[in-house]
Image (cartoon, rainbow, N blue to C red; front, side, top):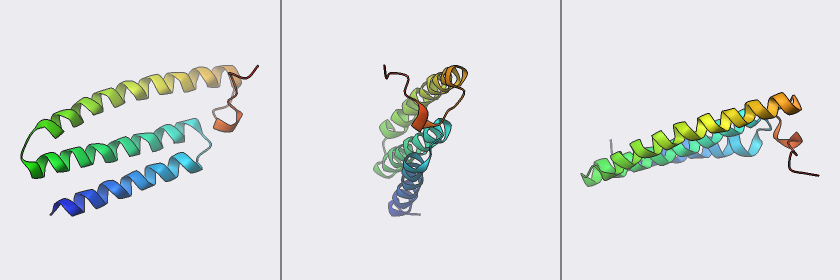
Length: 99
């Protein structure tokens, strides 16, 4: 399997994630779309690392996975707090910063 197949897979995953971010109203669905987009970037990092023969891309992909886990934990904690305060997680109704 060549590099082009991995790049097409990453582009498809990124497009699905972007579609999820743009069409979902639920905050959890938006977070899942962002996660898909970040995973597409990781696929690209690993594919280029593999075909260039160095480990830097794979190490960087592992680092971004660790950062992504922390981002998910913080994002879900924020969503839970917003749900407790507003009783909804729809992104259209989240206006906590308005006066």
